Image: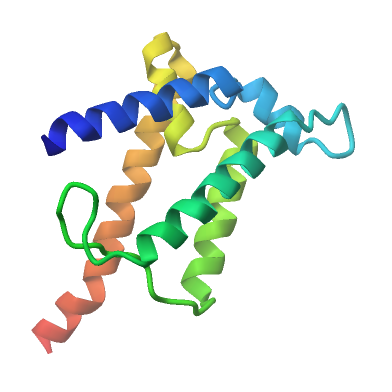
Length: 144
């Protein structure tokens, strides 16, 4: 049942990304181009997503189990640290340069174009590099 619900949620999310234009890099870059031909439409999409998320997280915070019966694991940290800031800057730079962020890039793979494929490959390479760098301090401690 969990796999079916994950598939349904992914399909709804992907369809929403496609219908809202988030999978179109030109539309995303138009939204980010404040000095040029600014397209505010994605701001409304993001605002709607934040509004839905606000209610969903408030609902989830009052529960100890998900609707499917699993334990809830909501974020608890409220600290803004160097890792968060650097990660946010890297995310924003990648989004601005490519016009994709992870969800829309994955949904765009269905179009068969080279741009989403290159972006997803670079994203996976970045994730692998992150994991390798995260494990270095632990390996150094074990070796000492």
